Length: 261
Image 1 (cartoon, helix red, strand yellow):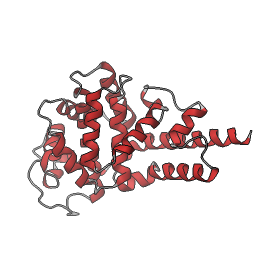
Image 2 (cartoon, one colour; image 1 turned 30 degrees about the vertical axis):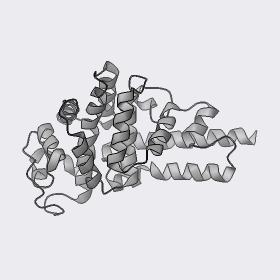
Image 3 (cartoon, one colour; image 1 turned 180 degrees about the horizontal axis):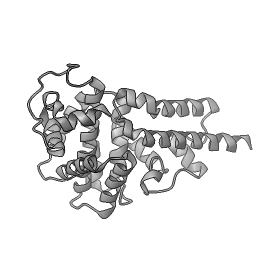
């Protein structure tokens, strides 16, 4: 991906400032926090690459913040962060950068409010991209199997900064409990029961076939890998999006099969 090389080469130093730029500087060993000169210039980086860099930087630093917000970082939370790195196929240098971001997120003075405000701006308020970010942070919160009250409070605050309704957070949490997105990180099995399938698709058992299909299509569209990459999801995260669409499809087929019998 082009943005990796530009980050390592320091080109993003003239592209992104603020807290995300400062974090990138720490992660990639450059002084990036130089203001917003050249924003939008094709000479330095395409808009999509800038968004991908912001997503990567925010994802790993906020994972560290979520891990520490309840007062301690568990082994399971560290393992989840490493599992995400594994799934991204990061080389040694990129993995080192991700770990630095995670560590920065654990700092007592981590500027979570400013980071989230800038990330929302860099993501151009793209709902599907912001939702994917929130799903990853939910997985981080559940890495040790439970949601600590401090973690829930932090996620609610993050939703406020990103303009995401708390109702959607609750909906995503319900999906996560049903196994959505967890199998790839060793945090639980994929959906296998009919009850889980309904929870994953966000519908009641009494829902009509038409409403069931509508919910299925909406979720498939939200998690379509090509659409997410076009909106700024780093290409390395396609595997995660692919597995989620497979889970959605499997849940839908399980319900349809049960209704035929």
